[in-house]
Length: 212
Image (cartoon, rainbow, N blue to C red; front, side, top):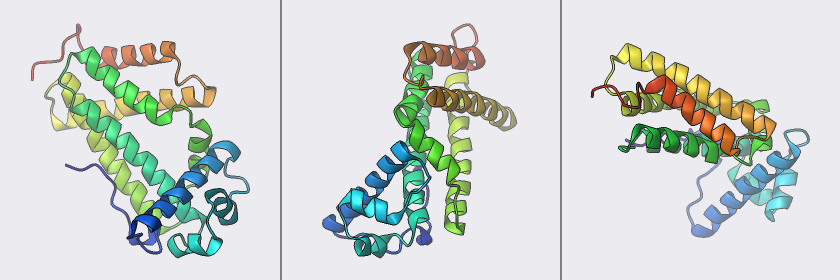
């Protein structure tokens, strides 16, 4: 089952159809992400993005009605990356520690080197109904994905117990990663090792998953 978030129609003014227009939209989103990563949300504007992307402001407005739509495109890209990392971990069929490492490494890779961008995304909360709808869709997909991670590492659980464990695990892992990203430590081998140990301690008993 796909974990990509449905795109509300209001996110883009129109969908790019030709390779050239798709490349331009990608360039706009990538330029905006660089600006937010280095300069934060203050002063972020469509003119700034168009200049950095090397496109005319009119071309930008053909696809993005305002700066919030560009931010929403970046946010969805990030959320898709998070869900892909969770899906990879839930599909792991190796030893428990290998699966815990798959989870941690995938989420660390999504956040490493982008603390400025993530801070900006938190500051620029969804400004319209389409953004709120996308956020709601992510929260459900995110919760479901963590339930699958719990099942993969811990074995079969009741639905209520799996959901509760997923809530605790997601809060612990994401909270630690966001704190480490703000401190510039998310790529630290020591941090990675401690986070893998945390996942193992919570989900795995005596180094073995519960009976499936």
